[in-house]
Image (cartoon, rainbow, N blue to C red; front, side):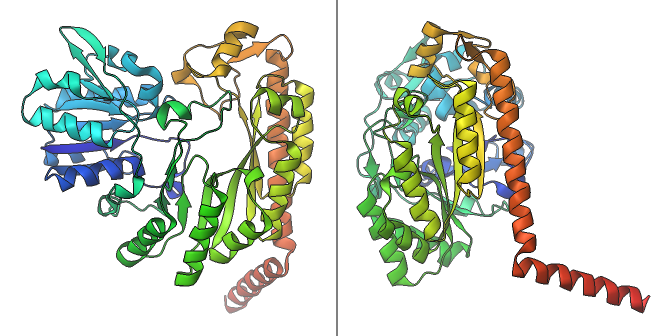
Length: 448
């Protein structure tokens, strides 16, 4: 069959900061191994007109909750212009389940891990075997006018058995980084997080040797770019991380890599130094709050002392740390946010962000708002971490106070960026750059 995949987001990233959709890459690899023809289209760079020449039988669309409405417009356009089955996948489907088939132009949806489910669905469609749909785990479809949600598919235990993502489909776009996914699942129970619905709580990790072989494959075939590890928590297993770093060092690959999500309480001096030596330049750490009661109520499972110690290990090793904080979790008030802002200002972070705590169905945060707060907007497809409009309030943290907290944190973030910029300018290299630019302009003026 001819299968096209559409990537629609995230829309908050600049073009030069985007990276390939690695989940789709895995699915394409499996489908191509079975002889199907696949096409990858990123709407950040291409228009839907690129689909016309490919003439797909099936179009798969990955969707997040924040991009759901935008994605539905694209799916509706495809349905109108192409005679193709439309399949939805991605994080939003695992949260919304059968609700995503309320739109008549969506034919199927896949929740949980999609590789095997999609492969079985494509085989059923190719054979026109609609009677077999009910046996495909992880599938949502219509039967006699009713939406049917099949039982969930068991998680893939052995991730090393999966082929590498179809990186050859990514080369037509100017992605600046190579993505890596080294584990799936998260054992932690943070009240605001819905990742357990997408990947489950059981952690399944790739072997360090397998990951490094993928790094070598990418370097050999697709050139030297910075690597970005996209795990929900890269360093769940500290010994696995150390071995990964040691292999990179032994192979002398001389790469630059960074980590999307890093747990600050699970790093020691040795790991930080190995990470730096192996090429790690940057990690993003979820701090959320410095208030002990807030950390306890959100079930973060770490103390601010643990977090601070881990960040210091990273910074002392020469790794830049980005801090992520949240506004509005259980126990949060305007005063606790002020505490977190002051902490962020003192910690010498390369940068930091304060995001709204957004409740999603099935999370404890959603239940908390139902029981102790008031929704100002229940439509979670319109939520955005980057919005300055709160979506709920509580007696202890009113709407107006939440707005004040957002303004306070944004001001602190801007001042931190100005401070960092001044530091760079005032550094020896910064002064040299300014002097060089001045001399260049002076010579140009003299010549004129």
